[in-house]
Length: 237
Length: 235
Image (cartoon, rainbow over the protein chains, first blue to last red):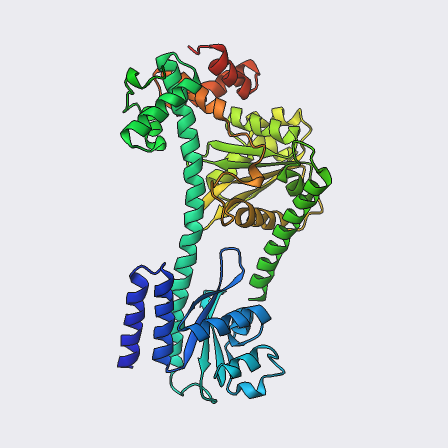
């Protein structure tokens, strides 16, 4: 139990420290494999468009196997992601009917058993941890609690990451809208104030932004707020 | 669980239909310019003729609008002048709206009579929602009566994920969905000019422009154009 707690703390530290870096997602997955005492692990998820992707893997072979799972739509991780249920295959030699393409490839890579653990957030399956074990047989008894804890940590991490990706794109769109409107408003104010055309007002804004190393949006917003008066020297000749 | 997966499936199928329909229209049109707008595919998907999309700023001002036809454009313009209507309500409260003509005078007393002139008898509007808020509103005028419950929400969802926040787009506003959109540049320029003339903020400048358009029964864009390019002063 003490070891389980330490493992979860270690995972939480990885999540806090710049989780958006792919290397850290791989580290998280490797830590999971280590704590669960399995050969390798990979994390499958859904990208912002709902497509299944390999989010991370503890090592190169695990990443390759996870990609095979997605390519053939076969394997413990893909099944867990699709059904939201735990998937267990204690001996892959018996799984050639179940996963005709994936099972032989996994066996060739030295994997003897495979397990898929769905990552849930409330009623939504946001990913699945797939475990590749080198010896046939079930996962160690008594590790259910640890597995549950690990899956929860990973779920939070994956969801936060994806939520942030979506938020970034929405923020970029909103920012582009704000910028466009602020620049047009500032053009109008300057044109009226300086008795120039709106095109000339745009040149004034651009000249000021370039020469002072300030973003156009900030210059425009300050003009609109009335806190910036652009000197006449910035007028076009 | 199954319901969640069916929702995702519906969203993807809807997005696929929208893009396939638009692609077919582009192929059929060949070199004809202007190319068919994405909004034609949106209108076909929702089974209506008059469809509009408004992207809004934080203060609910319409920043960009795009419409499938002149009726939708005209009603969008009216709503912008009057400052009340489905876009304003959905962007403010985040809930979808379905209303028929009998409800218009209660919901939108000033917009109702103006909209009646265009023969619009019902409206459905859905937020273009992300996990951080509302980007805008999808509005359908005279939606088909046989539309399945939730189908407009699926279209709105598909538009957000596949057409507005699509990956790998450089300029966030350089999107096929927004080809031919009105960014109201002249209106915003005019707001700035009026604010300077009156010594007020740009949002008050926009209110003055709206009031003038309403009082003179003139399109808002025409008033704005007269101010920016015709030297009109508002006192």
